Length: 249
Image (tube, rainbow, N blue to C red; front, side, top):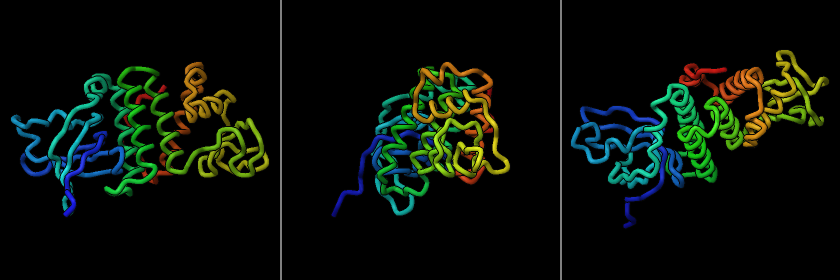
């Protein structure tokens, strides 16, 4: 009989209380996709791994496969990102939006994992690392993560060619439902006119070209953030609760 125990690296996305002492832990794992598991007795002060299962933490975890929810049996901390994220409101709200997005985009993976699961895991790990180490402005890290996470899910916006006809850019109009930049011939009603630098910024955030992103102005960042928020809301088909708390430029 195959063992029901398995081990994986994981990022803690969310926790829920269960009963008097337990918690449900939502994990994004490297090889098993999104996993929901019960951590029994974790809310007791005597729990040996309660503090290791905080949101934003990267952990090495062993689980026992259950019928509906797996059970946490061992946990070791790899990166305690929570400690460096929760002491700064701007960083905390950006990280909260990231893990909420990751939960939404990977919720159909079940516990079997998919080819994209490892990519989503590594992308979120890199974004949380950048936030915790203060590598870039929190808003830039968030917008870059959102664009790249959507790209992995199959919804990469066009930031240069026309999203409708493919006409070479640069173009200065952006239409969320059309999929990004649109040329004058294809431009539908409701398109947003952008400053040229804003479209460059969006492209840099999507590709992870940080030197270009860092040179952007506050106005360009504000325009880009508004579009990214609208774009992610359109594709995940619901408002991200954490996104409304993010401090924008």
